[in-house]
Length: 350
Image (cartoon, rainbow, N blue to C red; front, side, top):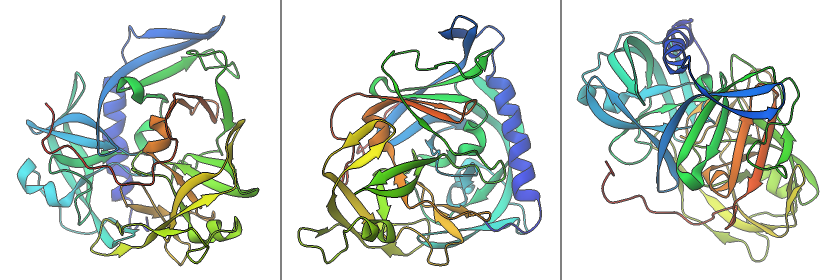
């Protein structure tokens, strides 16, 4: 996200600091990863999976709604198109911009009188306001990004429709796969606090690929250039054209489906991995598409060539150990990569 001034970053960071403080319970439960290590559970967020989108229930100024859980977005925000129905003011001026698959969107600020997540309510909370397009069904009004989740070790247990937030104590480099002694691990690249992304090194067709763990992406997707390095292009025999992928703006981009000779993350290997690939990256290599089809700045580092999406997270039990820059995961079963579009529910569950 190209930023003009500090308002876009400073306001939301302060606001989510309050949310984090509200979520951190003095009497949290713990899961032991080692004799001297405690994983203090600060909260559990029930998740609704809708069209492969992980959603969490919130209230904004008393209006019941949902936020998208989006670890691929650097910045949490409210959708500008939802401001009026949520009784939110839109502050004039421009605090920066985001660039995604669908084009550009200016970042403005807003202030929420009351915001409720789980059992906790924060008042008078500033937050970013951006986006020109819906990111799901009508009651999805915003997203929770990595600017929030990087403050915790985050457990995705989507098989049981739950996301748990932990604060580790005394764990150091201890093994944190507390649900299974056979949990696999993979290193997470050190986070840039100004542009937090969960970046992992994977191999595809024997070629190294930098992947972003992106819960907001309904399906995992590979860039055109990485697919080509692995020997697959839109002209490769057997490759089929998929439907268009929409972005936060008005534009769309074409994607294809191909079979790749092996995908490896840590010690897990999937032979003959069937994956979508397309031009989800801005061609200037300055911005990268997030799962909500938002974009954020590369900050001097190259963009990821793959998004590991909600399909990957549904097929695994995952702990994002920000405290260790490490990913713990076990395979739940079922397809790891979903190449077909899953239709959302017709009505919102309550």
